Image (cartoon, one colour):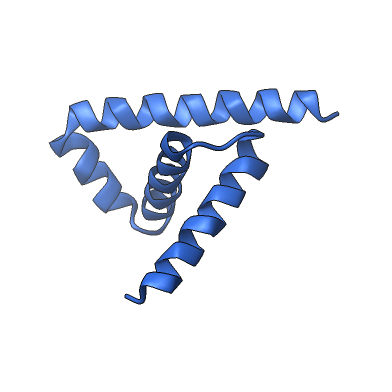
Amino acid sequence: MDKRFLEQIDGLVEKYTELLLGETSEELAEKVKVWALYTHIAKSMPALAKHWNETYPEAKAEMIKAIGEIKTLNEQHKAQNK
């Protein structure tokens, strides 16, 4: 893929992270990328997500942790902006 395109996608993810969570960092942006991809896979191919969860229970636990962190940060951001 074109380097410029990938940089633009990174910028999109960074802005999305900021709007979603109220802050951004490389670590948060990476968590949001993983969360978005996993969520899409779980909705579009639930059998694949189930298989992955069963095959990699430690990764599933890490995903649950990341999803929880994103949810908490999003709720805090929403509460601060009411």
